[in-house]
Length: 303
Ligand SMILES: [Cu+2]
Image (cartoon, rainbow, N blue to C red; front, side):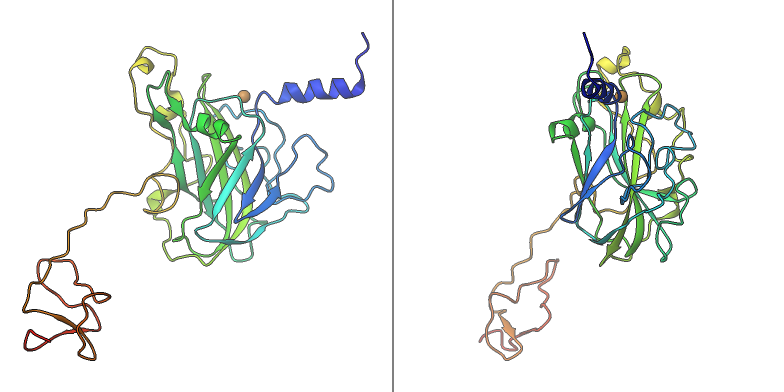
């Protein structure tokens, strides 16, 4: 039987599609194509840093762990701008076959001149989102990578509203745990964040790649088919602790709220003009009957 060129090409694509990576983005409501690793580099323009293959990185300390191989700026490198702090960034994978493992997002701030001159291997990264084992056991539970597949091979991260404005590399990463050693699939894109906050990542939240992971990290050495995996219900996501206290897909830390103390008559709240004000001039919460700004207490206790 004669194989047509088109059929041969489609079979080839089917072969490489056994793995993959982020091939497009939706950033602050706008769609961006990624780098096309199997197309000629010549003439490609993308906000994504160039990468060469869908193949995994099998070494947690690989020189290409930051932004894949080679992860250097493209000759016509673009930057997504503006990206409002607090907005959503979605990465779209090609058909993704590996439903066991975490999905993690990092940022790295670049100089004010932009990211195009930045070597991703020496950049300092901080983690803005992480999700690993979502429920169940390591062997049979639900993983973030499975949720990504179920969500049309996409994963959405929120840019924390607290990060300072400026140019950043954003790094989406899946780690596939179906074989050992673990497989790393990172891709990066250049963005410019506007309207940001003033919370810089702390020193212990910043890592380099390579450097941020060790081959001996429990999240890397884990054997999801081993005896322990049958009962283990926790997975330690590799890398530094999460940036800040907002952003990402982690649920916010629950805060304890105390019910406001209700003042009983004859204490009546009045606004600054002396009119009684029972709404819009609430009592502060606390152990005593404090007055809110702009409110004053009737000296007689009665209006
Ligand atoms: Cu694969």
